[in-house]
Image (cartoon, rainbow, N blue to C red; front, side):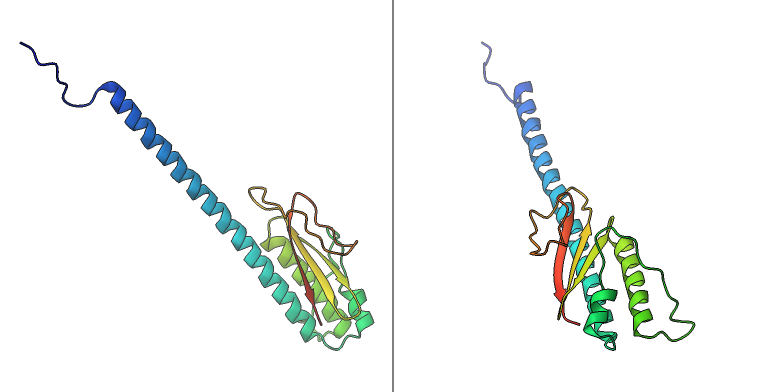
Length: 167
């Protein structure tokens, strides 16, 4: 008489096991992909913070400007072209020329270190408001950044970082 007990796995059991394993691998790949996107976003935000710190240092070092001069020289609209560069290494620059050199050099750093980086500066009586804007990889835009200023509006498809600097 033949025994009807099965030993080993059947084809259906093997296919179910492979399907469960494939689903687990897909979940793991999705988690790795999201972790990479978060790391990229963090890196871009860190670069933006370092650029803002650099601008704050430039403003503090150029203390010979009046508040009216700061409001004029340290102003820039989002997407506007940079001021012409002045070579302060060949001969010493006065405070006005140094401000123009700072704006050009810092603006170039924003454009090269952030993806499609742009900036806007609005100078008030005692504070310079700065907004950095860049095109994030993975379309992680800033949800409704309210700057409180009509001159500074973050485009909806970009990531923006806003800060205030007291020169």
